[in-house]
Image (cartoon, rainbow over all chains, first blue to last red; front, side, top):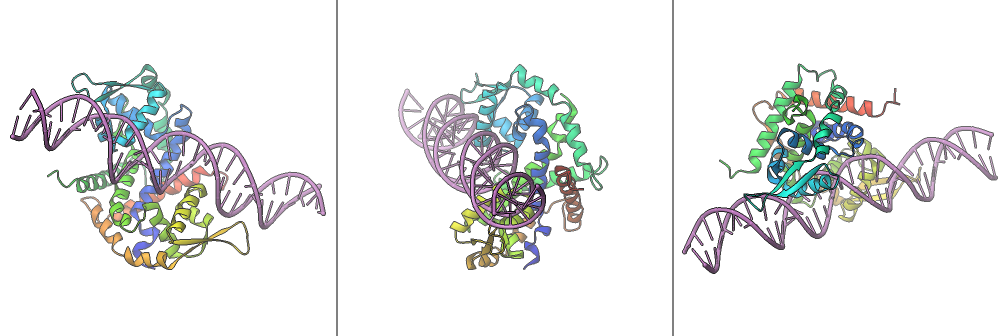
Length: 152
Length: 152
DNA sequence: TACTTTTGTATCGCAAACGATATAAATAAC
DNA sequence: GTTATTTATATCGTTTGCGATACAAAAGTA
């Protein structure tokens, strides 16, 4: 059994597991309002900048539009947002929050703190989080840039 | 717009994105052999310890059996492994690698290094990786233990 | 022994992710 | 101005994840 195949030596398995478990921690808080974690991400994007085309939302979340489109359609059917054709570019679908979608920000106000406190542990504290953020951001940037080598 | 709802301040979004992108980095290397990333994880578990019940594989990967069962069935239909009833406990399904499954370890020998080099960047080097591993392990342990509060 | 509970696995349904492909609108080329 | 190419989004198919539930084997209990 080669060392490099042991689960203990895998970065990806750790990221994959940590991501899944942290998303699970969000689940009870979000499902209470009929939301999933990716839907919560869309909400954060729109709370920050409302009335965006699908493409911009996808780019911000680093997802493909074929992932985001059905996600937005489900949220539209829930009355959280509206999808309308853009006026300048008729190809674009502009996504806009409804009152319900905007108001969810108030209803979910305590989610960040609740989840945040669920993660605090020995090596992950408010002081060390910036280190973790920096490493993850570097990894994301490295992988993202090498994924599209045509952009000099 | 509240600070705590900005994507830049989210640990989960970083983990989620880093996990997705790193899994995508595996994709071309694995699909060449007809494998997905979760299937690769199963292989690593079985290379380390062959002939395990479904439950042990699921626990090792921290997944539910209803995720692992169809995954194993697909791998069985690909001839990578076999699923057979246990002799002591007839409820258990013992999963065993075939020659093809064992041989994949040789075919995939260069995958860990290739992916590893794709992640190396400013703040993530062989020297700093243990720090990252430690933080991720702590997060995983914290979330896992608080997910099952009945185990003292 | 008969009844209950637990345990190991599977089935079902839904929501992601994403590769491949399609379609319409906009832009560029001729 | 027509044709070719690019762009924005959508559709389709496959594989995960996971909650809810089903079911049979095993273990515990009366």
